[in-house]
Image (cartoon, rainbow, N blue to C red):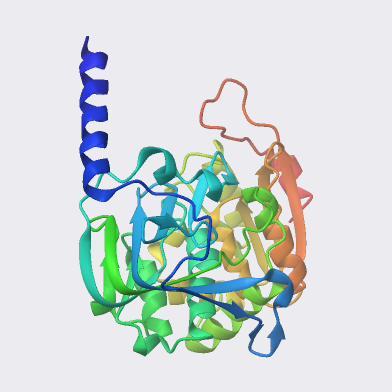
Length: 359
């Protein structure tokens, strides 16, 4: 009975908002108020093969469910190539949830131009997605728009490291719009761009083939903006014991830390460092050992021949950090481990005898 009442209420809300907001459809002809421009070059690099597009919509609408859906809308038509819908690790924009479920939020109006820089949870607090998905989107937009001429930037709620990167890019905090509070907007001019690397539909496959220009851009943009520390750390171990994500955690983390400290490694929790400090640490080290996780994205800032050892479960098919290492000419090695049987979190155990072979 409880579930029946819940479903009746849910369907009633859906019906009411369908009357208020109308049905969202896929267009069968050219959409008015929509302008699509090609982005073929960045810093002189030819990007034509990626077919990047910038979308401008007069009186455009944006909706996000704050999870894995972003809908870009013009006159109640979904602009699917500008939208984002991830289902079980696959990009499926033609199955965008608003086509089936509609939009159960009240529309809010924002005057001025708004650049869309949200893609649900994946661009939320995850460091890798922020650096590799969202920051490159800003670069793509800036190729056709001066950032200081855009009135607002539509983000998922930002934390400290995200605000720090935006400050370095010259994006003012007074221009932030938090999508958690404004899920459904109409704006005078909506600006959106293609995803920087999500071409092959599968998330892991796409990350494993991330375009070279993204890595080169991040290095060029941020390395020049950080100062070298007085005391450089040469060998580091990334301690993920404080990570909110439960996957890829080492159950013998303390044992590994004690062993590596004796080998002159510095154990670092990246959450305790500012963004600039993270860039500086990785820029100046020459050896990195770490379990698979978003923090390894910082090897973007490592110098040539830096030794990288990634500790990763055997069933994880993500080759992102191997790809970054290849682009940056780093000395990459991986330690593949079986997940601990019956461990629901997918934790792993690293035998010190195995680790010794990679020191």
